[in-house]
Length: 411
Image 1 (cartoon, helix red, strand yellow):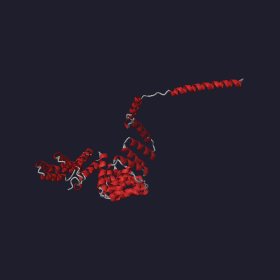
Image 2 (spheres, one colour):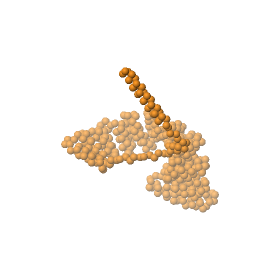
Image 3 (cartoon, helix red, strand yellow):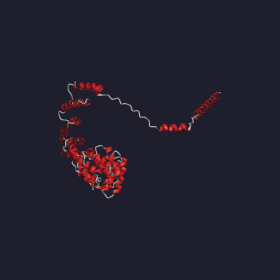
Image 4 (cartoon, helix red, strand yellow):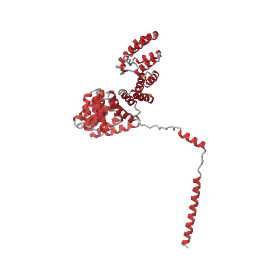
């Protein structure tokens, strides 16, 4: 009898489960159908850019909450009758948080008896923060004399020497850093910048080659290698290097310009022109790209295109004297003499010798018997030379420019 009752109970449970399954299935099958208009509207909505909600970060100013807490910690540490070196360092760290660097330095000097490397290192970092380079050097030199300087400390010492113009002292400490850690890239960076500052491009180039042997084709070094190969007239090698640089850093306009220059100087001006004109369309805000493209347009006497490129050049750098000069020349060739003189005059403060070119163009106007404009150009030359003198006096040097290499003016 018990078995029979269990059997009946099991059948009832099974029937109930089946009924629930059917109900659930019916519910799932009720999927809403959308009209085509609704679908189109949803797609259009999804394409709209979503507004980014930027949450303002809550910042705790030292002046409000932290200052009280930090001062309490300082008071607690200062209250200790016998302070250890660690206590002094902890107090100095708290003063640094408050940006009270003088107190931090005074505290660390108490901890530096006897002299300790970690204290000297901390002092050097504070001196670096407040711009006291001489004291930073003194602290790092004491670490070096102790014979325990790390590659990072050697490099920081080199950076400090470089900052005050003592590059002769900087070179050996950078080299020592590299000797201790051949893969410490910051030391190579410092050494490279020293050589560039000295215009010692031979050794700067060797540093790049050494770095690339150790670190591979890194973007920064490829860009520098591309530039230096062109500057030093290694144009055949520059073509390979600059192409690699473009692959690594395609948004760097200088790489495209340098590649074009390399092709131009290896008797492939057509390819150089293609590269530059393409780059000019891509890098509208690059002064160097627009100027070089304008030069190429001058070379083929496409004055309208040259004008547009020099105009874009000025938009990218309103103080580019060479672009004003090129724009003036292009406008002159288009017989827009008033506009030409306006742009030529704007080049005067920046370009030594712009007055000579204005005078030369006045002779061109004499040849076509345009006396009125010729006189305007001649009278502009005196003001032009004065503008350059005043600018040079104020800014110490004019912009780097070689007028005899300018393809818009070269006879």
